[in-house]
Length: 213
Image (tube, rainbow, N blue to C red; front, side):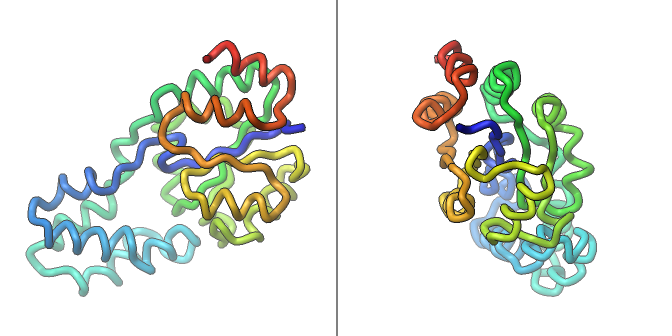
């Protein structure tokens, strides 16, 4: 029976629209392509999430690949993306109900060490969490099996009693390969509630979800 629910951050707890964000810094399609590929799809971005680079270090490596005229905007785009976090609509109500029903709630996210700065914007949701497990702190990334294994060992949880919620099917699949249950989040809390009802939650959690339908 599921006792523990583990939430990804980006596009689960918070809305994370890269394309909309990039458009604030570049109007031209080619400039947006450069920002998308050289920032958010770069090896440096992954290295930040793995805890190997801080943002300014990443920028020093990325900068030579950016056209000179675009560099000021690109630097701001890399360093400021977390400043306007938008909480996922309906998520706080769901977390509050699950917490009230006795579930243990956690965060498991691929994120740089900047998470510990921008987490302040997530406090309305994090107040319900038992713990926050950030990839950069561990040098691991989803969907590596080691990150799921380290998570349950650190919090002394049973994989069979743990369910992971992520917007990326690959990450959800990684959890299942480690003995967890998993749900793919498709952007609607109402849909997540319906999905959770199909899993082996405690009677108290099931009753709590019924109140939200």
